[in-house]
Image: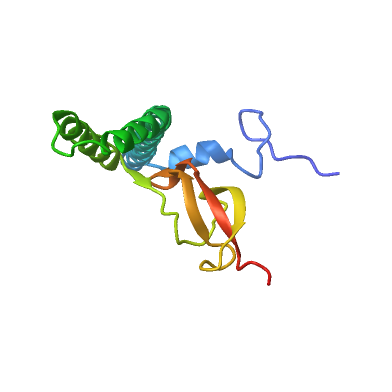
Length: 180
């Protein structure tokens, strides 16, 4: 058994000096300050990036909230627009130069401009192929002129808000030519 070397103070000598003490003794004050500055610079850059990501997320969420609120408002407006269209059909049966017809047509133009500027598009129906993502088939009818799966009549207009479906178009779909 070997005995550890003892220095003059009476403490045993260790083979390895303390690692933390060795690092601090090895670094001069300038290097230590540079390391500290680099650490704080990294922390500042991370905090800036986090803040930027937070701002982007809040802006995206605010935009999504606005779009949802806009969609709800426009969905509630669609039945009013349907009833207005029915009224326009009746008004147009009269004198086209009457003040009522002219006034109703002005309102109709304003409604169309409002819907268009809000990003609302009417879904095309008659003559197109039935798409269950955009159309709601109420019935099927035989039609010699239209191939099977083609829309032959629209019962209620459908609307899309940019990439979101507001309301599916209610349609009648062709079964194809009648059986002989």
